[in-house]
Length: 372
Image (cartoon, rainbow, N blue to C red; front, side):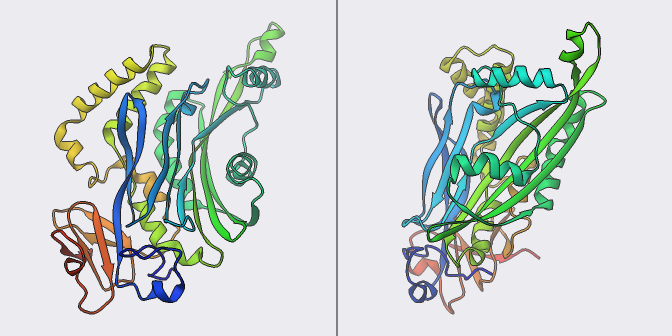
């Protein structure tokens, strides 16, 4: 289990020696934002999460021209300690297609090679997808120490997409899977986690059509929409789980960004979007629809959009729910004697007798209580 003194606390670096870190009086968590700097002409927050004070964000959201609408928005960002030894990294969504019709596969592969269609490759389980797609792209040369499934994440992904099954026809079926690989690279270890869904649905058979016949084949549309990694120094990965789990559970998507991005993808799929000006208009409309009051509280709201973020860490350990002074709750690393909030997205946890954050940090701090 994770030692409390894992990460940056009140100015102590996560890479400091174990004795110094163990003596840290408190763990200070602060809200950080992952930005979309250019998708809607000006920079906006796409999502936010809690991270140890002093950690920084590298990367963010980028937009690109791509034949697959889901590949247009590239989420690649890391929240990492000052020395880079600890990090939580988010990877882009990957999608690919296959069919029971071999002719359709050959056509799809040629189109993908020409950059005019989604990648074409057979459906696979989550472990194989991590090995074949994510390792070469993001962790080339990493040594795989362990591979195992993640049933909780797979179940949550299934629930998140099951409402779409009817859109693909009465015979459509949904399948989900999730897994994690334990990797070693140099002096670091990490968990690489991925979750995918496969939608199987009937389509006209190209092979039969070539023979003058009519029939159907089954298309297999795969989407790996959940992929991230935890990194820690070798020997510290298991100890890192409560803090890293709290970081994942704190992820909140900006509802205006989510709505605007969704409208852009729909417009692209319908070939109606002309460029940056159209995206800016979509963003303006989304802001008006969401409403100022909701935008002011999006960080604290817990809605269905956060369920997958919560599922990220269902199988991890060491998280405690606390009651916010203004209502709602927040999940923080467990094992501390007391916790405080300043109402601005910062939290401090400590087990030192008599410790109060007000003595060391500015602002109004309120002690929060564990949820019963």
